[in-house]
Length: 239
Image (cartoon, rainbow, N blue to C red; front, side, top):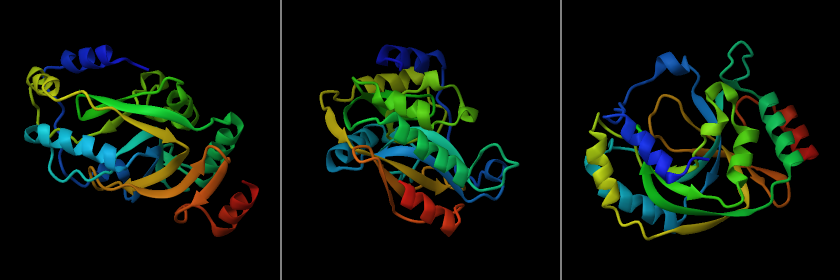
């Protein structure tokens, strides 16, 4: 995983941030309504305070209406669909393979530290320290390779999205002015399969299922849209 020095260097290599815009993204989703990812839900009071403070500090640069709750993305899965002709879909069999891999890995609960404010070209974020490299191990299991190389994984909590092509040196100066003393420690005992509406930018995440790292058990929050009821019942019985 990249360190903060490398992250800052890469951010400043580009003279401007990436502008995010509100649109339907129909060329991307092609009518498929939901996009899935594996993530850690860190939507607790302490992290909310960190994110809200950074959001206010960077408000001049950020796109209005970002409402995605604090989370740590572990792996990008794909569009929830069972049409095999699309390589960027996430099907019931893909989900079953992920659960099988998680059970084989036997990754125990672990602690992370959510600390320093940094930035990608498209979004500011809080950097995460994971001394045991558990996040990287989960990323290697859960991230679909069609969405990029795994070695570039930088665990983070997104603050928001840039609303324009801002000068990166100017943004970096604002980032450096943010009080960096607060660190939030979180004990991670479960990870979640989540989805969001593909036609919205920065929309809310909805949890489909939680996987308990300690027990190796799956708890459903809502049906997986692409999974037949009989398949889901079988999977629940086997886990």
